[in-house]
Image (cartoon, rainbow, N blue to C red; front, side):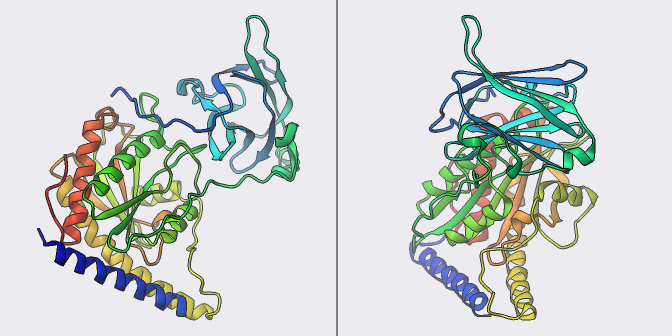
Length: 419
């Protein structure tokens, strides 16, 4: 335990080191925690899929009529449907099983006021017809889409938002839907800033557990608990990359951390694996070389971007930029490795850990050059014990208390963590 005076000295020194790094760079279980969507313009209550042989029909039941538009994306094959923001109450087990050409269906918030439904396809297919049926005496409003198989050349001929079909304002080619960004809050001068990143979200559900729970729901619930624990100490400002079920790119998550001048970046996830007997928590830090094939495969699966952003080095030569970024990133990686050790020391008191608990991989979300970043896989949703535990608020609270204690120990400010 340290005094307030020594704590403040630590903060000031830490801020100075962070500013110095940036100056150098600039120079050179019952699950009751599902997040509620704000500003929802209607309710999507059910999906029905039926294979008619010549085509596959998707019917989305809605509380009211709406505008929509759809377009195709390749690699993998999918159809993206843009809709108004909806309160999505569709049961997960009706959207995760293949029917006809439809492999699975995901939905999430993509921008305030705009929702997005992503339809994964088993192969190249086109939207044969799409329309909204008004309500009747015994039926709600229905969005109907018929898919039929096609050739790959035909599918590839009309890709992207510029080839939309649909009705109303969502059908215009000029409609550009961008990821949601949070406003940048003032950075407290006397507090350590921790960016907490709930993995996945929106149209990206992450892993789907044995019971149908989505990883994105588990990670958001845990992140909210961790934020509360950090801020209850009075010594941290904790910021979430997302505070509801919204889509965020990996680069955007890093950029949000830079915008609030974060001192630490903690990303929360819950993995799945083919061997359902394997369970346990693991901690990842960035490395060019993965610690094992599983770590490499997981990083490849998670990454959708592989570039470092948020630092303006445009006036420096490419060689100088590479040197400066490498120096900063190595320092951050070393700090992250030390933090991982402290976290593991606390987490092993609360839960089962994997045999090789500290792992290394090239996660894009960990690539901020000047912010020590870690990724915690809280367990395997493919394992019934891990999944059941992660759905319980008290269990997640134990894990997040251990994370707080690990950070406190790492910073030399260990105190009694709230339970």
